[in-house]
Structures are given as structure tokens and as C-alpha cells.
Amino acid sequence: MIANTWAEPDTMPRSARITFCLFVAASLIAPKTAASGEILTFEHSLHLDVLHEKNMSLRPSADTRPRDRQDRIAAKLRFSAEFDPDGPLAGFVEFELRRDIDDRQARPRETGTELRLREAYLEVEDVLAPNLDLRIGRWDYEDARRWLIDARLDGIWMRYRGERLEADILAARENQFREDLLDRESRDGDTDYIAGLFRYEINTQIELGAHAIWQQETDGNRDRLRLLGARAQGEALDQLSYWADVSWTETARNGRKQRGRGVDLGGKWQFDHPLKPRLTLGWARGSGNFRQPDLHSNEGSLGQDIETFYYGEVLRPELANLTVLTIGAGMTFDEKLSADVYWRDYRLGNSEHGLRGAALRADPVSGGALGQGVDVVIGYRPAKNIAIDGAFGWFEPGSAFAGTRQGRAFAARLELTWKF
Image (cartoon, rainbow, N blue to C red):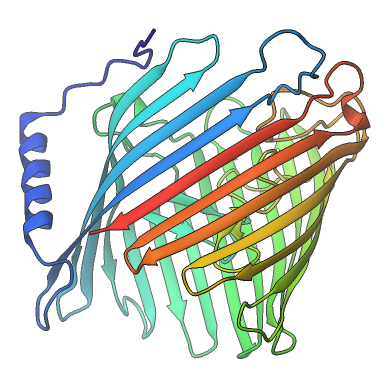
């Protein structure tokens, strides 16, 4: 049975439909890259994301009931335009037309169509001083490791770019305006963010950073998060690259303040060989009261240029009340194909704080050995404009899931990008 259980979308005004159709037509007709002197350029791309999850409730093999299964598919067509004249003012807009399918065992299949406004901003260069740029509107922001912020925000972004110093000041809200132009309910911004992120390049091998983030909910709860942290990353030797993140947080929930600390350390050693063999070692710990900002994704490159979830393809948790040890190995077979394998060991701080933000649909009942996981991550680049990434992950629960929840969980994803 196929049923559309999503809310019926609003009808987009005729003028908006005409404007979008003209924009799409222009982006398809116009050349992808601008010739010298042109001030308006268009780009378009096709994306296909597939996620398969099985037994995320950790049912044991002895359980005769069918193991839960969920498949999610998203087909996305993106169109963007950049306005960049010879002057201080520039602009950018990007739309995404997407179709989503969510098929979960024992539930009606959910389908939906969205027209998302991904980005729409104006940018002014040298606004108050040389090398100081101002961006206003909806824009996509990522910190260097996406450990803090990986989101599209509505607001103001000011950036200073010096010879060695780079500083970002953000004042924004997520989804202050509609994300889906077909659904007025997609405007759900109820959290304000103010952030400062600073990076200083000591030399070509060492970069230091500091950051401060203030997160305040605007609903009745008025929950708050304050975060201060520091970062170091770079290359210690010609073959060794490293990262180090440490942050302290103070949260206020229902009038109760709590403080926590999070640490993420690691490095990659790449051998001098045509296959580029490499070893990766990482260790991360978040105290029970530590909280990452709601805008993080914990997704990036640990091995080569293939993105993976830092704390596992199956769990995908927030670093809170958790310790994760990561050991990885990989190689690049040629410039087109690369593969990495990661083994992870998880330990939970205590059962009181639980496992925060994880994809599992099972809760641990005690602290200690949470389990172990193995991930295989593959990247393939058959052409300059085509990228194919895949990942497979298994999670074996530990003693923290005492009782009947002892079955293995599995997750697989495929991401295809074609720029045309």
C-alpha cells in the first residue's frame, strides 16, 4: 500500500511558479560557466541519496518477529544562479526540487514533493573595512570539521579575511522563513544563534582556532546553550595530519544549569606509495552534560576525500555521555577509486544521561560497554562532474543493552552527484 501521509502542500502562487520556471529555463539554456565579463552564471546538478537501515531496534536473532527495516530515498534537482558584477555587491540563489520516499516496515509508505529554497543572499565586499565582507539572507555555513555547525541559516554573516587570520561572526535563526516553498508549515525557526569562529594560520602546517556559540530557544522553554572551544589542525610531518577539538558547554534547561566538556582528537598517517595506504586513529569523549550545538552534523573526511560519520555509520550519535575509539585503514587504488575501513569501540558514561541523538531505536539500560562497529566507506569518481559515495556499517551491541536487545544493526547509504 502506498499512501501520502505528509501534509497536503500549499499551492504556490502563480507568480512564484512562473518565476521559478523562468529561472529553471534560463539555468538550463545558459552556459554553466561564465565567459570573461559576464555577471550572471548558472549551475545545475542532480543528486540521489539512498539510506537503508535494518534492525535498528537491536532485536536478537532468536526473536521470531521480523526485524525492523527502513528505506529512505531522496531524488534532488538543484538550480543555482550567481550574480557577480565588477563591484562590491554580489548575490546568490539556489533552489532544490526534490522527491522523498520513506518506506518503513509495517507502516504506510510516505512520499512527498518539496521545492526548497536552499540559499538566497546578498553579499557586500569591504563593507566597513578592507577584507571585511557582509552576507545577508539565507546561506550555508560549515565549520572546518562540521563538528559545530553544518546548516543553512537565515540572518547575517560577517567575515574578515586577513593574511593569516580569518574570523566569522554569525547572528541567525534556522528556518526563519519557509524552507519548502510549497508548505508554509516548513517555517519553524524557534532557535536563535550567535557565534564567533576564528582561525589563525601559524604556518602552512599549523592552524589554530577558537569559537564561541550561543544558542537560545525562543519558545516557552527558553532552553539555552553556551559553548566555548579551541581547535588545532594541520600537518605535524609530511605524512601525518591531525586534528584536535575541545569544547566546554553550559546548558540551561527548565531553569537547571549543567556544564560539560567534549574532546575529539585524531590523526592520519599516509604512506609514500602509489596506492596511498593510510592509517587513521581517533579518540573522542563527551561528558554526560556535554552538548554539541543543534546545527552540527559530525560528518566529514577521516581518510581520503570520502565523507563519513565521525562516530559511526549506524549509530550517528551526538558526542555526549560517550567515548569513541576509532581505528581505520584505507587506500586509493587510482585517482578515481578510494576505500577505507573503520573499527570503533563505544563506551557509555552512565544510563542516566543515555545515548543522545543516535539513530538506534533502542535505549541502553546501563553504562559501560555500549558495543562495537565496523564501517566500509567507498568513493568513486568516474568523471570530474560525477561523484559516487557508498558506506556500509554494522553495529554489535554490548553489555549496556542487557536483556533481550542483543541483535546486530546494519545501515547502508549511497550518494550520487551529477553536475551538468
